[in-house]
Image (tube, helix red, strand yellow):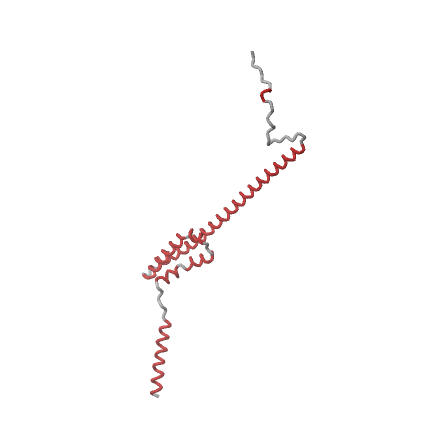
Length: 170
């Protein structure tokens, strides 16, 4: 029996200590806490599938959010619940700002693309109208016997000096 106690007692103690150690939660590092506080912003950025240009345009939002998350970690360390709530609200507002800015950038890009398409269509319409006018002029020129065109000048007279000049009053 003593032999059994010698083997069971250390094993039971090891299990008890291991269970106690596993039950305790590990305190997050500051970097992990900052990432946890930035989770809403990173989730929004992931949902929006930001392009590099959009990410560059929203860089200041990410910078402000990182500073706010760092302030939250400091407030958590000092157990300042009012500051934590304020910083949490600020991160939520920064998420809204990010979404609004990206939507505005995308709407602006779409509007610019529509404007380019409209200008291109207008240019094609102008060119088509000019081609139609040239074709109509050619048709008129072919219908006329003398072939006079409104776009071409008649040939200069051979003897320009023979033209009568008005007489000066006496």
